[in-house]
Image 1 (tube, helix red, strand yellow):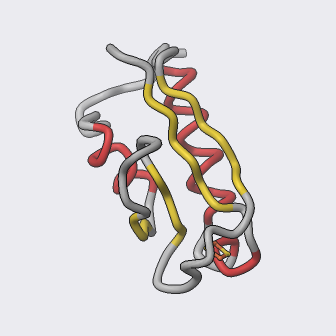
Image 2 (cartoon, protein in one colour):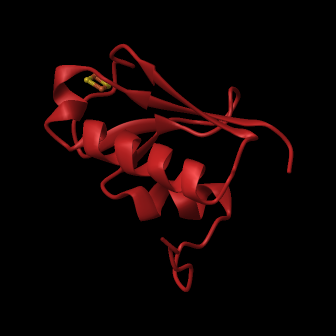
Length: 87
Ligand code: FES
């Protein structure tokens, strides 16, 4: 898998849309599934506030509004459904 950087806004407008939770859950999934090529970065306000947490999946891609970590997984082409965690 090629390296992919996921930038998630940490500005106040996106925090109101749970960007902190989305970033935390994505980091947990990344670690649980050993998805080393995926890098999660928190970035300042991207100046497109409202309607969801602002996320840019690749450096040249557009900023997309996301409301759940599943939205990010879908953008990355990773399906969480069916994946079970083993203790
Ligand atoms: S607070 Fe996230 S785009 Fe402005």
